[in-house]
Image (tube, rainbow, N blue to C red; front, top):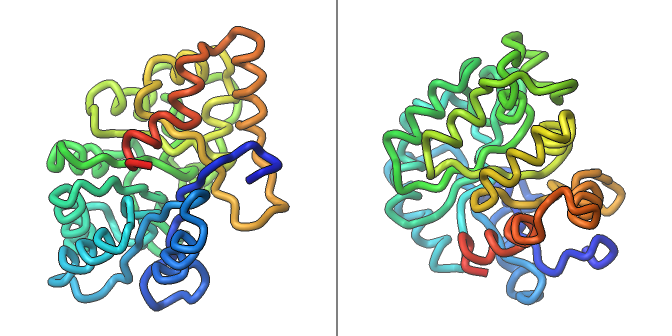
Length: 254
């Protein structure tokens, strides 16, 4: 973080008890030890649907600033995920979703090509802040997004075709936000620089710079690209500051 000029990061959780690496209690302990450097989002194991609200409320009381990343491999209209969204909306906890193209293909919540189930979530829970993340979400930046599962799980390449579902949903729903982490978001923005800069400026209040790093050897080029764009006058300083820290401060109360 110091090398990259990152002052504070929001940790993502792997869950409650299933996976020992990065689970809620570990994230909480890290934040208690280094409060100046870290905040954390909680995750739920996919069990005990009736207790979802109580569990999220407890994690919020322990300091969790949101839910994420939500990786449960079920369709977005599944009753468990719907209960998570309903509880998170009531508790004013933003949710970061990692999206998968198919149940059983890869981890993450599942939607169809064109993201119709995500649109239903955005409509049904208008006060819930949903942060889109992962290949299957960001590939929909372009209108020519692939429909096969392998293509939907890939990084976007080449010029963006106007009319993509991600910009359409950003335009229609003010509760949709964007996690600009990993090469999935990086490619969505950098694949067509002119379009990417336009997207950043248009939705500057709802985008967050992030890394998605799980070790200090991972390298994602978007951070350096954003620095270069603002230094060259192609990205406004105001937008740069919102994306790099001001939005996170506001939305996650950092």
